[in-house]
Length: 203
Image (cartoon, rainbow, N blue to C red; front, top):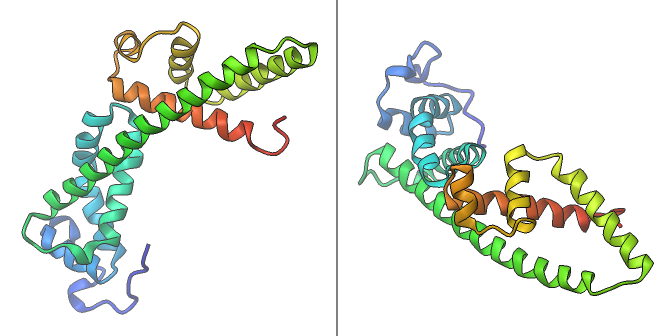
């Protein structure tokens, strides 16, 4: 994040109460690289943007991360603000794009991982040598260890999908979460399993 200028003008003095400054005034300060102005804007609107994001992803961790990314993107692209909309509406637009991209990636990655996982599992279970059985048991053991590092509800979602063979909609109803939140959780868990299985020393 750009560093604020050390030579503040009188209007930007340390005694300036940014809590009552207008959004436009805060944007002017952010354009000059002032983190104080950015922090004030962040504190003013974080909860509102978070609520906007959470209503669409239905996952607290994802919503918090996407909200922070939205404000960071706003800071970095502040020169692109034209003034045709209010500052808050502009930030909402950035957040909406972040959410749409996140959901699109989650659905795409989940579909690819499910397809790859199904093919790999079918190939593994077709084997029958003692060495192959041992390797499968080791993989299941490592999988169990990795699942212990995530939230309990996310591990439960993973097992309901891949052991109980429940559909996304069935899991969403049981967990009282949206289908997109279930897909996002499955993507996160599968990415963890795939990345760690490919890590040096995993085999």
